[in-house]
Length: 178
Image 1: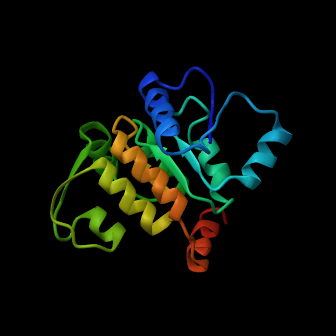
Image 2: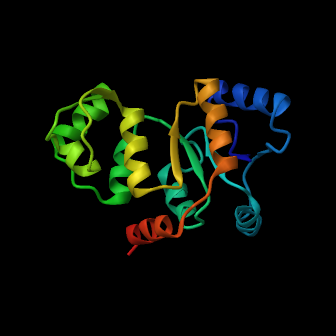
């Protein structure tokens, strides 16, 4: 299901139409929905794929989190800062700027992000990798993908179709909204 309007970037729409024709006959494109139709639809879908932020950005993602259904969202510019805000993570301004402006981060053994992720990564990683690692730990029903890459879009749809949320992961999501 893809909801939105003509503000969806053309490359997103083109790739999603190609996916519908080739593989995913259940993919539907919708424009604006009245609230009652929106609520009914949310209760029935398998998951959500967000190719752009034209449909409300992270506000809609926050709303959908508590459905416990999988959400695949495009790695748009402000997503990193939005996810940090949704989760309430405390990252230094220096680290936030480095990831936001360069799309990369150099992991060192005892760096701030490794402590946050409870990991031991070393080397340079891109923002997409960092966001997905954060989501695995704090937002297990969210996957960040690159919508300009058709293979990554296909992987996201497959991820949605195979998604199973564990009870312990529901608790992680619930804790964000306490």
